[in-house]
Image 1 (cartoon, rainbow, N blue to C red):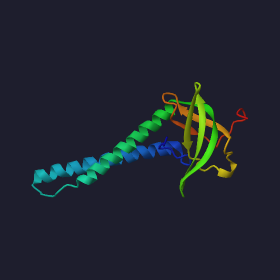
Image 2: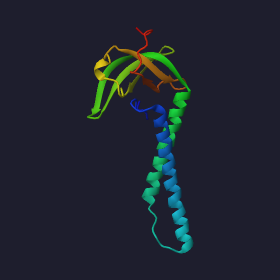
Image 3: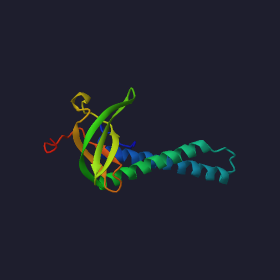
Image 4: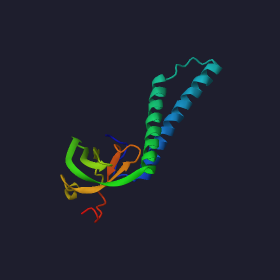
Length: 153
């Protein structure tokens, strides 16, 4: 499952960035609609840029949805232990670590970026690391490679 999360960025900064992204999209939409109204009122026959309005709406939806999703994840999270399964490379600049974890006896498999953690120091496969999951939807999770509690070992 893909998330709006990037482990190497401060989470509050990322959440703020998603909100700004969404609000800027809304601002562009309102500005374009305002221009359409003013142009019609003044009799100016300038064709509005509908593609800009559509793209801005999409940006607004993605940003606000990401912000709400992130806020909901952070306010409903619980912790368990996950085990790394394998390292997956999607592109030169994009790689993740697949892991599995259990919540209430159910097995879940997810992926997480390892951010600023040194890949060589992460045990793959079989490494045990804390996993934070959404209590409302345990399929949404994130493995924390920066913290290895002594209680896990």
